[in-house]
Image 1 (cartoon, one colour):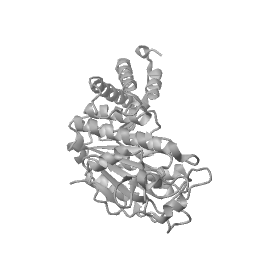
Image 2 (cartoon, one colour):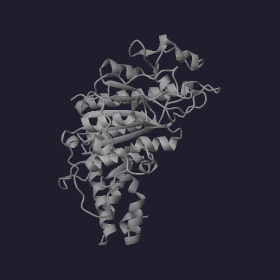
Image 3 (cartoon, one colour):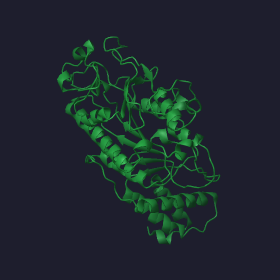
Image 4 (cartoon, helix red, strand yellow):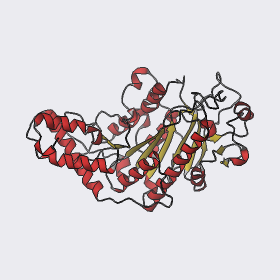
Length: 404
């Protein structure tokens, strides 16, 4: 379709086709407000990396001193001499040398035993639980915890049309970013967004309608055009360590470019797939963890080079861990608790939470020691400057994970 010859119906259809690239969470009524939250006034940015599929936490942060480790992992056990030691009891997977480097730089916080009460072993249910920070079925189908957080921020006039949150890469929008009022965009690539901006410019020339829906689309197109213009002038930055040639590397490199564009966006989201390791877990998990660590280190190095190190925080999580005992296929099945990571200059480095016992189990699974909502509460209160209890509808105590 030639966007220079759009009639009213075609204009709306064509705009909806590209809505995944645009800030499409805007309401159909009401004026756009600029989200002037404390986090945006301070220029703070949250980058979330989701490890989709259920990462095996016991092979990521290994409790090598626990007698249950060797007993339950006869083939998947990692020798103590190969681990990257965090302390006298825990070691990182050998592929996580970049995480070890962040640990040495005091830019890595490891939270052990993270999960939620009465865990569910379904990917869908567990993802929805983490995405919404809701334990009830109705709540799990509602707005995301980040979407609610952005909706809670203060409206103070229409000074910016940039999306408040951006999902990088060709993924479906995660429920965590679903908001009632705050615009959210999916950016598969810079080129795709630039193309959307060109389409927006052409389509705006053809908009002569005055309906409520067309006015909404007009605002979305204006946002896309303005954002695309900002991106067009930004060149890729430099990192002391190259990004890995893998989807997550591409997505974090894209996020770095978007941050360098000064879009006034406060939340970015990336997804690394492939962690559902029911069989032949090694060496696949190690390869994915290496991509994760190398991509994150390259990203944080670029933020340091750009003078943004103190204003960027990274949260890394997976929907559940794996069972303690390996299965007959040299893999691991769906489990419960696992580690969560925060990375970047703003973190209070160290290991938090109690490492679950591998001998005192709940039907073969780890007993949760830290509710994941406590990690969210830390991010909301100490990074985004929000009332965590209001956003999460929970009074769980935040952890001291972030520097004041």
